[in-house]
Image (cartoon, rainbow, N blue to C red; front, side, top):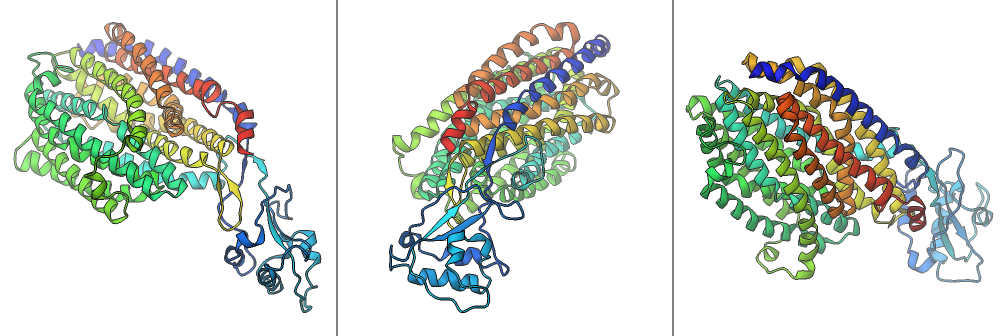
Length: 610
């Protein structure tokens, strides 16, 4: 049977590689004209500074309520091509209440704390010449701040926008990298048992747990969006409500999930394993132990989303790193030293999840991101409605996703009774995750940055306006270009690392069966970069139902493919079905960003941002 898995698949695999590569390039290029017509207010949130760096603090101490503080738009630049703000002093007959403020400005300019080029011509005329003693003028002061939109490239420029996104993305990438790496460690040690059935059983039970868990994973996605909006508005109360309610709902859902897997393990596993399958002897004990990890896993994900919503991606990385290092150390000890085998791997993972959840709870309490009083208080429908409304829409998506993954697992397990196909599929998944974690991390960045960018804000020091639809669209286009380029780079890297990754299995039959699926997994990264980030944008925009419907359509296409292609091409046919699945998801992303999404109409976006 393993020969059949390899034999017929190569020509079809080659055609699939070419077709999907060309399709991804064509769709990616269609975003460019859209993005390059945009402009964005360049606003770093920092004030201009004089020679001693005191301009920001000096201007920040002015009482704008007493000096007018009106903001105008001026298309001016200084000699360096940078944005220019100007301080304008009007006639002295308008107000006598600003004498102290005028004195502060004139004194700051005289002592070189505010560069003269930042002042308007009328204000400069009111100042004494350099070196002269200044005279006090009674004038009303208004701050004119440039809010000019500038063209911004769709492609990475390593400018301020790129640096801001990279700062958020790198910890997310590292955090997402840890879990698959630990999964690879688990797979490595289970493979060391030299038993393909043990690998197949562990993979099946792990897939069932992941599918059951991710059915309720709408909580982290919605929580991150709600926390991001509350954080952008500076509303601590709403932030606490979002986190507290997510924890309450998560607690109820996790109890139900754990009870279901503990009470009916055979029925749950029957979704991926046939009755009487040899791998059941390894799958059942693994699933029994992992069932207790439902609650701590969900708490950890909610905690990660809450910190991500506040643009803190470093803290979750530290927690995840510590807990998973513990898991990696405990794996061989429990599996071989204590001779627990596959259940030892499950127990090590459970311990790591408990440590992670406890750490998140402790830190969120310390940073006042939730309160116990809100946990034990019945929430109002007004507060709970956004979470449940967004969650209901995403629930449909999660069911569709996991229906696809369960169908993939079931078809894979049914290809042979030796466990070779299932073990080869698990190996190909590991190859896929090498690059997928980076792209998935960028998806979470989009979920956080987009809602934060959509809210128009005014800098408290400079009075500069930034954010809004145009700014958000520019961020989206830049993220999409990053996803496309990284998809190409990561796919190429996976191809180069393929010989080394295959060494994780000592079984030659498994390595041979995984060759073409692993190549397909590498090529799919090209469109995955666009799919993952595009779907993150949908979440960030709050378009949960659009995302869910797109996923449902993709699932229907995948199920049809899984019913036909594996019969002709074996395990390669399973991975060809993955290609159909992600191609339809990519079509949904394209429709959202160019036709039906809130950022698709550029004229509307520009009008609303002005």
